[in-house]
Length: 111
Length: 113
Picture 1 (cartoon, rainbow over the protein chains, first blue to last red):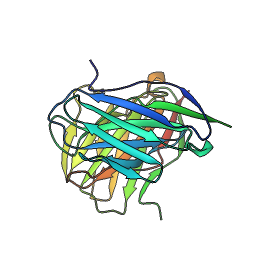
Picture 2 (cartoon, rainbow over the protein chains, first blue to last red):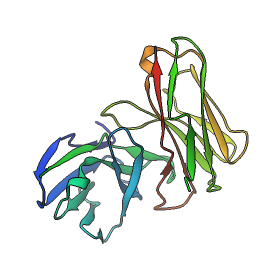
Picture 3 (cartoon, each protein chain N blue to C red):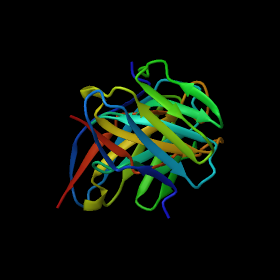
């Protein structure tokens, strides 16, 4: 079993729709959780950290469910510019500053 | 304004010809990483430095070496590139602490011919 698992997609979604991604992780001791966005042939960029109580940043909402060991990302009112791959990231087994990466979920927003 | 700079952006090398990729940072972060990323895959950690302490991932091939002469610079040396080493190589930095994400460079895309 992979340490961080994501549905690879692609998710094809019409502009304006709401889309949700889930991610599961295997290390119950993980403390830090992130969503990164990666555009085609570019480097990953931090989208948002995920906090225990859940957090929101504009159209983006992240949730953490420790009991079930999954993280979610919700994008409301999706824009064409949201098309990208979304990577779920969890801190590693051995330390807080080593991160374990999911392979990403590809999102395609259609006009 | 770029805080983690990788050079070059694109590198073409011949099969078996040594190549060096470079990374510099202006953030004074104590942790630096080298990742390899192939198409549609997660970034794969090759090495990381915690200050000067070098940490090699168990499955990083011996063909890959790294140097960190000071806080700001880090190099990735591929001694004998093979066709399977063609990938995007990403440098990232962070400071230790909870909920602190990475800052990535723009990557070097390596082609082996």
